[in-house]
Image (cartoon, rainbow, N blue to C red):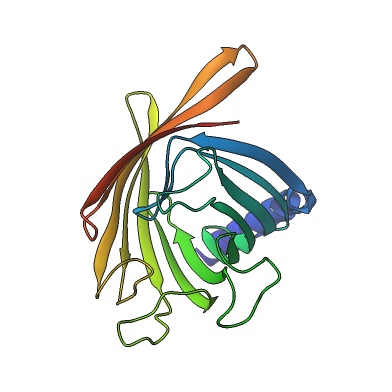
Length: 239
């Protein structure tokens, strides 16, 4: 048995040594992408953030390290509160296997200018994320750690947090994702007085073939927010 195990170990090491250069070579490539979505409504974590919106994105990645820019511009000019709402986010992340960690700088144009970083005079919001994709299920935790965060009823910073559990699956020729999201404690950022489920959603994606070599992903998503007692249905196209 020991001899057999030794032989198997030698074979495994040999195969690994052959495979590693190809893996390393693939990881050494810089990957970049650019795209945009147009959505009938901007719904984020069970919250109505805006109406019909154009949402561009661009990213670059190298050896698991990535930098992404994402934005949202309301085509209707104003959001539900009457603001000419625009958003610009930057995310620095790292992933390996199923594990991922990131920091996101969210910025909204509804208050102080972009270069205002004061503790009480900024519309930047900084969020840390850690998660693991197990394949059948992905779990992610998010916490606001600085910037324009929500507060508790007593006025203290809430360090607003959010946990999501998402499960992708295929059904009827479509790619589906079922997701549940909740905030674990009190914060006016998510409109919660304690633990609250604020996102129960089901989304589907289908490629719409335009030509033999070009197609557009069409997606639709239904979202229910038990905390605010609201429901939304959004459709969009990715370019």
